[in-house]
Amino acid sequence: MPIIETLSERPEPIAPSTLGCAVLARFEREPDTLVIPVVENGRPVGLVERTAFLQKIAGRFGHALYDNRPISFAMDAEPAVVEGDTRIDAFSDIMLRGGPAALLRGFIVTRNGRYHGVGTAATLLKAATDRQREYDARMADQTAILNDTRAQAITAARAKSQFLAIMSHELRTPMNGVLAVAELLRRQPLNEAAQAHVQTIVDSSESLLRILQDAVDLSKAEAGELELNPIATPLRAVMDDVQSLWEPRASQDGVTLMVGYEGDTELAAVIDGVRLKQVFNNLIGNALKFARNGVVEARLKAWVEGDQIRMQARVRDDGPGLDADRVDSVFEPFVHGSGPDGAGLGLSICRQVVDRMGGRIWAENNQGRGATFAFDLTARRAVVEVEPPSNVSDLSELNLQSAPHILIVDDNATNRVVAQALCEMFGCSSELAEDGIEALQAVQENRYDLILMDIKMPRMDGVQATQAIRALDGPVSRIPIVALTANADPEDAKHYLSIGMAAVVEKPIKPERLRMAMNAALSTTQAAAADENGDGDGEDARAPRRRAARRA
Image (tube, rainbow, N blue to C red; front, side):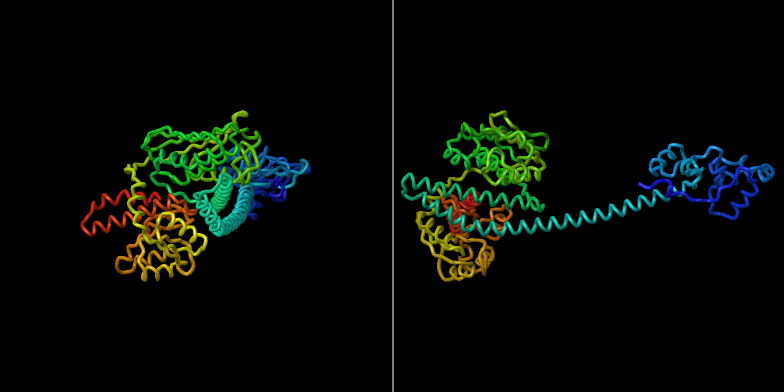
């Protein structure tokens, strides 16, 4: 911080005996001089301020009173005096407390009590302006550096996110094949030991896929690209889905899983239901690792406040609990709760998702009786149309008895083998194509009842192939197409349906889900054909089948 001495000017001082006419003459010669110090024996005794002195001279009898008298009669005998090493900001505060008059009078600067210079309001103002200008320049430089650093960090995070997305896809493809083959093996007449080995393959593969998804989501969050898709979501259905997903796994682990929902069963919130389930899935998966006495509770409480829905979610386990020094850091990336299992990503993803939803998430230690992970959310209330349940088993009996002929389109040989084996299991015949170009040629040369279409393929992908088939003339343009994809993003699925696909089935392929989607797609086509022939029940007959296809 600059000191007062750096602001002082060094005008020639005058003695107290200097006549007023001499001072007036000097002010006339030096129009820029604002104050003249009065010094005796090297020490300041007064200060003549230009404006004040000229006002006295200009007054009635001014010249008669002051021209031939010593300046000591007209000077300020008690000026502000400050040592030169005083900080500018400290002295400025003192002067400001003295009011505007103190600034106008100016001040004398000393060094060890002896005259060193003078200062004025103008010098203080200039110093303050220069200081502010320097501060603004420094802040501008720092802001530019920070913006540049932030831009570089975002670019790096996006590059990492894109790299992880590509690597995730490359790893998912073989892992999906492993899981699909394992699902086929589970349906074979194996002995108990072999079934256990197959289950280990399934569990390990699903765990790896979850880690991959967590890594991709965390990278997206760091790059500011973690997107939400808020839609009308029935909250009871969310908990039903969570229970259906985790009950088999909990049963295998010998854990009692209690999933509960407290609230209006028809209550729906405008929220990203997929991300909400992801948070529950990560918290429940984490709790199952540490359930010591075999109990995990997952509960969601929801109630209405005006047009908002308040949600309180709790996931509790009865394991060893959290280490005291990790309660606050457990949501950081690569931090484990009470043990070494996992990659330490799931809880961090939970925090990122809850934060993006505008909520709050935290952990509580239950004093040696496990841990509780809690999060609170608020969302707009939604009104959803209650759909009558469709009888999937009836759809199965209705369609697959006719042994439809299926075209399987996938560039991955393992995926083609798995899909063909599943079609055989369902009693369907099938043919194979390796990309969209082969599929487009096949549908123009042969008759198929349904197409199972992969999305990412060389030469022509699944989206392009679907659009090309829909652009053909005649009945071939209406062949039902079911997408088989690892791109489970809701926006992607919505796009696939919008271009004419009948359903979307996520990889790794679950036989029940694939059968349900095929049934629904075939049933919708059959109902449409019946309508055209004048047999049908029309739209009412097709509606539940379309809903079944969307759910698949």
